[in-house]
Image (cartoon, rainbow, N blue to C red; front, top):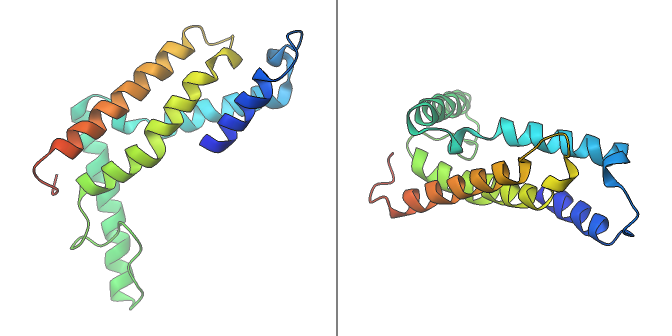
Length: 145
């Protein structure tokens, strides 16, 4: 998705000055999909207590899947082995590979959403929160949390 956002940004900035991207239905649908995706993956940038509670829930869901896979004799899916996976390592990968890059790219395209006043600032704040959380996770001395 991040590559698609950057591709869209490049095509818009290369367009003639008379082009009005807000009238382009495909671009507007893409912006709507980006905003929905950003909301879907926003847990790591929420306040610490609810973010941790939801992260623990998703990890328990992953671990349950891994337990079922082990019992069935299948290889355990990535992030699903409770004996070899920590929340900290999963969060590092998710935030660094998905959340932070998406919010950074969305901040560059916020001008496409004239119906969302302040969108650029929102995405920049979300990106900063993701980077802060990532730095905190890497500074953590434990990998079990």
